[in-house]
Image (tube, rainbow, N blue to C red):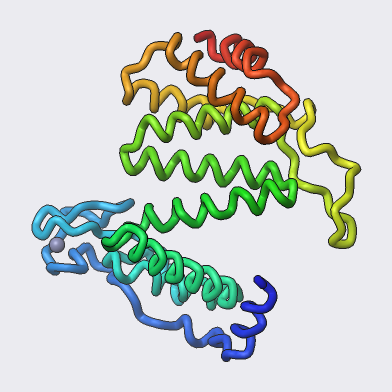
Length: 254
Ligand SMILES: [Zn+2]
């Protein structure tokens, strides 16, 4: 399916290099919405004090200048980068998938979906594909992405559950399927001790979410063990939930 869609796009003309030489954004320290003068050139996403719109900071592919852009110009900047990097077909494919999901969600939710709604929905659909293919590293990464989006959306309970599950998967040592000439090989097991890890980034996110929820460690332990047991059965993971908790507890001194 992916190849088929890619083929359709490859028939359309891919813009050549000169197409990204587009003047977009402003290099001046002025708000791109209301043109008010800013005290300094922002280093990252900032809210304009005058009009309260979010100003975004990007690098312009044409001349590598730092520019200020409006929210609705972000996709255009992404597009220009894709043209410059030779990834325009991929960009179009992802864009089309995104827009399609947006339409599906609009009907389902009976409202305009947010960017986070769309990203979450797309990621949820990726999970069964990764598990079917035995790509447990990608599966784990998608779950981590889901957790971060839920946190961003202030859904802290749901985010915590995802982070704890990512931690449990990590302690089981997830591997991506090994393919030899495109065919899956059984040389690498789906989970192995060698790949097991406690990533500082995941621990940091778990602790940050616990603080937001004001939860104590005993209740976290119960939640970790119950959601890990479910996941263990579902994904046929080698490590028991209790053994995983002991490893985590020792590492973090909780
Ligand atoms: Zn403004």
